[in-house]
Image (cartoon, rainbow, N blue to C red; front, side):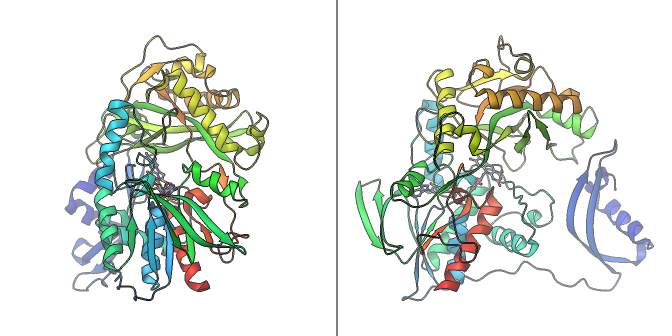
Length: 516
Ligand SMILES: Cc1cc2nc3c(=O)[nH]c(=O)nc-3n(C[C@H](O)[C@H](O)[C@H](O)COP(=O)(O)OP(=O)(O)OC[C@H]3O[C@@H](n4cnc5c(N)ncnc54)[C@H](O)[C@@H]3O)c2cc1C
């Protein structure tokens, strides 16, 4: 049906009857199972799947099953989980479902306190290395757009994870939207509710505690050591199973594993910039109209091409969003994006990134399993230096980037710490800037209005996924050398986004249950 119809329940009813080729009087109750939008034609169409019954016939109940998390037994098997991001939190919930006690060690602060640390990044240009956009309760996903998209095909698992989010306060729409998202303003409350569930069932959470060491013997971890950041005391605890869900930004964790001789491998990842346009422009391009009707959501896009022999693609597009300062330490600049649930900011931003292989950074002298991490940091550091050694980010108008000339000035951007005029071709490694330029030229050919005077590139988008993989046995999901170490989520290289990290957390908790 034309998307406009969706705001009028009577017209939706007519559309359902028409699709069934039933007279309107025959149609009884109906329920929406899936909502999608098709904007390829001039009239944007809403494509819904519905389940309908004849008048007088009840639809079968389809309530969201509330999962009960019973208190874990006193003598339950203990599982240490490092990291309270989506992988760690969902692993903890699954441990409880399996009768095991999760003990979470999280370097960052609970969500509400964490907010103060985010403010100091853009007000004072200070980055707390333990509490920032990537570190803290809820992980990197807390202050995000909350897009819940995964390439996983296990629909049952995805549905179960989404239902858990609904059980903890997410809007039920995420169960039917083809491209669901939650929004930065709603995610903290959901994460707090998950924390309550974990604590009520007897799970334990240590906030402000950073994993700094572990002792192992005969191919297994015997104890973990964490630093209580408030007291600066180290605490050592015996450990039966260790889930490492520390995300892609925990460089110190990769370094610790490397020092201890735990096998790691380099992993391809993508790097580039954030691009920002006025949201109204993206709406006009995607909806083929001057003004977006209020029945349509702020438009998004997804762009992919091959350039200079490598993939260039848009990444984590945030309609109505903000470009966020996501560095995890001073001396580097990192960008990413978020949106509130209504996606009602005047900007549209997206990563525009170039696919990189380990051979790319090896050719530049960054070798070994941590080579990608060092290369990534070198780019983040050169962006920090180029923009004045604060959290300001280097930026260039799209048109000037394509012409390889520095911008005379910059449009207003959503990036709160501020931006500095640069020529990104002089800062980004040529293998990135060349492919990016070619890729953007292709996108502009496909979508000429994309080349707008207000379009600006802000650098770098460097943490798309982990440049390091922590190997694991595909059968029992533990590290091949360290049998009770379970690499999990994005940091291990087993997820790329909130939902896939959550699903991996569940999978790993199940693998531990089956092995114990
Ligand atoms: C601004 C932003 C927006 C994003 N938007 C989206 C989106 O819309 N949709 C989407 O799918 N994905 C998005 N992502 C990516 C998504 O957040 C990650 O893919 C996801 O959070 C990965 O989950 P994880 O649990 O594996 O790791 P993380 O979420 O990174 O969690 C790791 C946790 O481990 C903790 N930790 C690290 N080291 C230690 C240590 N030594 N000791 C104790 N704790 C430690 C960290 O503090 C952190 O809380 C976004 C990311 C950012 C930064």
